[in-house]
Image (cartoon, rainbow, N blue to C red; front, side, top):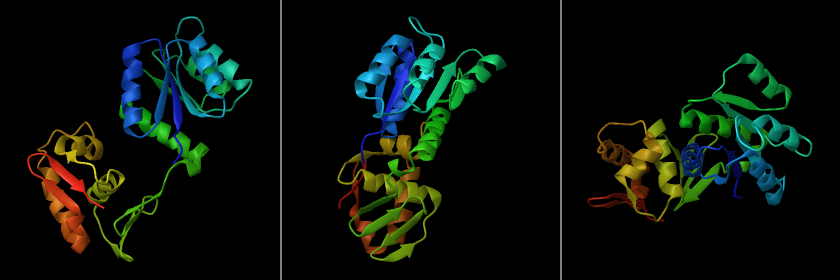
Length: 226
């Protein structure tokens, strides 16, 4: 899959890092700009067809978010998500009039932001996401939420499905329980990491002989060898 590039523009470095971390975790390539002028420069230096989406703060030095959108819209229909601490209706309406695709007020949940990014990119670039992953005779259709093992479909719960997808997408990589929790259960899970052991046990049983592909790394976590 080609890299999907997202340009994050905000004059607060901590905000850029927060958004960058969550988007990178989802597999996106993130570019950053600290002000509006740098955003425009970066956008055109990269080539206006190479950046798939722009996440843009409104209040910035040198050139504010509205000016950046006006500049981009002269040459590109790239999707834009506006971030702002201002919640006035007229600001939101202005954004939509300028061709903004979504509008999120600060403070916001990074996970909600990522979900909106995913939704916009699915709509604007439906071929950008790999829907089929496979390894060791296991084929997963993420769109259909189905798993085939040597041509036979097996039934998995939602979390078992997500867990198997994560193992296959990171095959032959040792994964700690903490990393699995962060990526499959997400950062808002505060339960016992041993819940992973329970899910892995059930997953192995449903996979039959292929369950042996999931190796236990004692004192650390798991690895799918394929």
